Image (cartoon, rainbow, N blue to C red; front, side):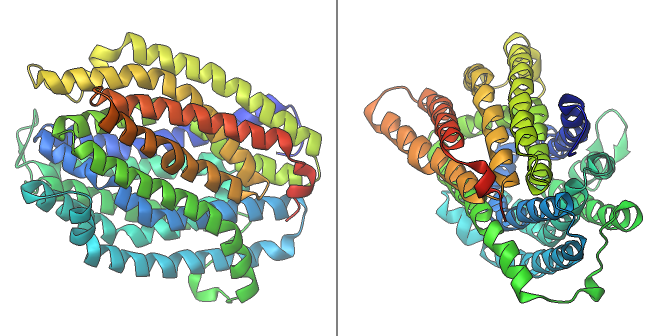
Length: 451
């Protein structure tokens, strides 16, 4: 990670992360494909809960980002004495916070969904799906520490393998849990509907966590066990200091998406379903770019820790070039294969309005993904330098300062309808990337990367 040809290093570290992200995206896509066969309402209800679920998870993600940056930095600077302490206390924080938030989310789920505008049968389905998912939240949190341990060492292939196993569990369990009779197989299922999709996801998260624990103890140079942890308040403060901006950024983003969902819901179930469908599809084609962004956190962290400042700058430059090429390819796929892609979610002869809205948003998304890739690269660079505050500003600013105001303005001062939502998505991603590059060009990263 701190020597050798740059492009092969980027690809070696990021390629497994691309696959890993793709595998994890298939969690939601699998649920969506299965639930879409039940009804658009079931599909929309599962998507409606995503911002709230992500709001709670954001704290754990922030700790994971901070742990990755800190562990990578100390690996690069060869301060091995600090590695174990930081890994241990990161696990302790994620485990305790995960338990607390899992209980809090389970209790407050119906209240929060009502505030978002859910009502009637739609609210009942969304609440059932979300409450079950909150049961698995503690496993999400604990997993983030093990993910940080592996990613900071560049052991991204391991993450891909265990994520693939977890995804297979989810895909196999989904139809058995959701349907009373499995399509094509003539087998009986449990028929739990939307609740079945949630339970399949929880079980797959348990599998993911257990595999991550096993792999860290088998293949990692940094190992940690909960019963052997020695609490160190100063270490926890260091982790939380870096984690707080990332958590606030992710949390602010999820709150923004909560508001967005409330606004989108006011346009009707079809608009919410179209928004959710296309987002799940764009998540898949965006995974190569997102994988490079994630790899940058460890790559930049280790090289900044080793004082390889010129190499870190070149890694970022080469990453941008790769991301632009990948974005062009993804955009072409979305433009030329719109019809078969959408037909995976929308049944033939289904609501014409739903098809038209999804088709329109997919066209806008073909251009949005360019800026999303650059956004991921900037976030990875800032986090690798330990400057998580800039990632927070980008994440929160994109939604609260740009997107939500534009959506509101176009809703009340234009006749664009749902098209205004797609326009706001494009403009907000463009402007925040411009701001991110301004921050990159104006700062001395040699000094800012000293943790």
